[in-house]
Length: 151
Image (cartoon, rainbow, N blue to C red; front, top):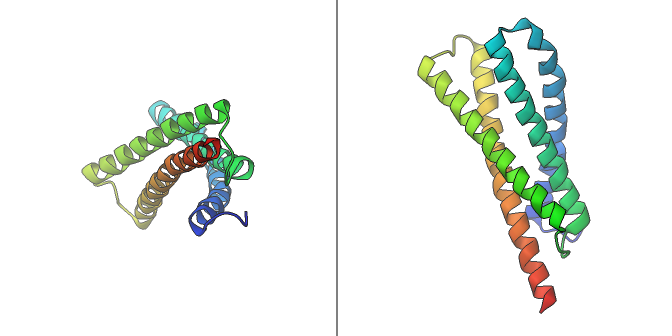
């Protein structure tokens, strides 16, 4: 990790830090499925899949940093996984945006707990945007470094 610039160190540390709240969210949210209606359970499953996708993305970024940084060429499988990771991030981002818009439109912020959840979901969206941009930059950076090594 000593060869990483500050930008990449921050990204790596945030990937590690995000694993804990995501795991807590999975453990805390999953048992509540039976307490919901059928439609709410469908949304809960979609949300759960997306949270697992974000967890996958974090582990993938940590793997890329530990295996390929600062100057190794990405393997074909890792490139494919990074593309899948970007698609997952976009799906999460679209869902978060949709939920936030629906909450604002329906004015469903009735108590402080709702406001807290609204803020947390918004922060999660901002963090997802950050990781999405960083994954694109990781791929570009490693492609550029590996092409320079070939010359």
